Length: 139
Image (cartoon, rainbow, N blue to C red; front, side, top):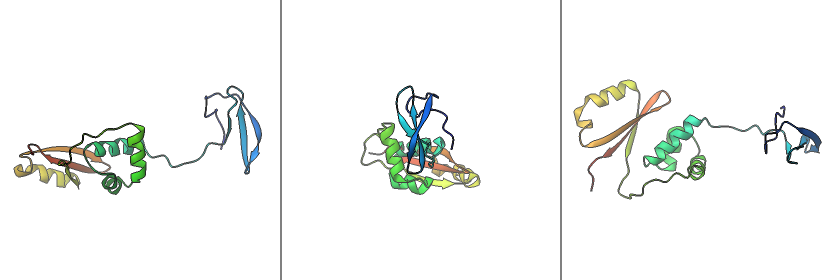
């Protein structure tokens, strides 16, 4: 893998500085930072980060979000900490959710009974839709 710039300062002015564990090391001439080749890691798309944080704010637990999106609950916890997301505290409030395809969603909204007395949020989830429902006037 080719090094393009210093990961610390972004400078392109660096030199080779030895080998450690069969990996070439470099030293940045600008900030004197030592680094090796960029690590190849699994990067989760920002779409799923935003979706996970939205679901967290809607009241779903980390494990529920993990089951829906297929992303580790630990990653979700780290994103909540990183972006300093605060969920309003209410122990009696917990929404229900369903995952529907487009035709099931149309059938759901055709029934007037499903729409009265509740708030509903519909969000896209890949090729399906997630319907989050909560009672509007709950004591």
